[in-house]
Image (tube, rainbow over all chains, first blue to last red; front, side, top):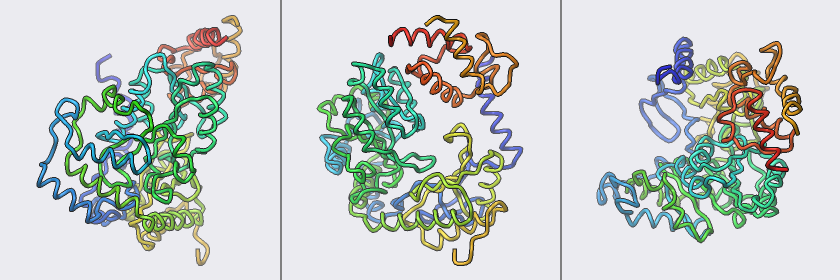
Length: 399
Length: 83
């Protein structure tokens, strides 16, 4: 078997897509016009698959902060923070994130993916037990792999199943790490956080919550589901990303542990990678200020999500979860999902298509991410594109 | 619990996952090769196995499991450790 033989499965998928003439995993956006508009394949296109929940990518204050940092601190840091030094702004952002969440301290990572990798692998090691939700993001699975710990899955969003598995661990349960997400990226469904916190307390385990898809979206201050559910004080570690509501690149963790500053030095994804560029840090710091005050954006996002959810429901589509920033349409068979996705793109709407095994269960899905920057007219245009698919039910008058 | 008993119970659990891809499932049947279970189906199978035997099998311990028999041995070991 040649070294590249393991690529055969990927090659087969690529060839299948080429045969269909559809390539949702290699989309090039020729031009970005606004947070919700671009040009794809020469067509003006509404962007509804970018996770740009607050439309922060074009925020004028963030752009100005990035421009100033670019001109005063240069284009990049050219190295890792441990080996080559932190800029003052890296640390300032960590302090600001910790303050935003009311936690003891924070660590900034170079991507959200690396934040999960870095935290899980620093917290747990061989002989430890990490319990993860079955539908966890790949970054959580990969962080577990890097840790070398025993990795135990529990049924998705099922605190009772988690409790059962903690009970089996006996005395080791109090040393275990539980990892869940606030909002799950594929279907947009929320974790029953209070119930998970109850289980964590019962067994004395540590709890890490990834808030990638709820930071900026949920809670009065935009802290996410941890705020909305009123459990922030009981969550040991909150992980998040800069690449969604904050409109940039990077990731972070905040926590109350006395070891926060030691953890970073035990975290290979922190130590052995280049740190974030000054402009990225500057824009993110500005975005965090905007995010905290952006109750109006969160309200608009909620209205847009409800409008899209209602519109697609009226068309007879089966949706993954109640209205949220992620609205997922369950499509079923893979090739149909790919054709449906291509149909939407040709009608000027870009969404994401997910097929098994990336999706929970057997169904393929079309995943829309709603933005506060979408106009009601754009939401209606997205619904109209869905309505033009032959499988859609025509909405009732006034729908 | 002895290995033949575990294997018998395991085959009962595995059978619906196999969806008739092989006429008879035995200890030698390969989970991914013969039964064509992808990684997600293996994970679903493991949830069912864990319920049946009241154990938790860490994902990382599955790396060397290829056949139904391999899995039965792993279950026996895990049951022994948690007893």
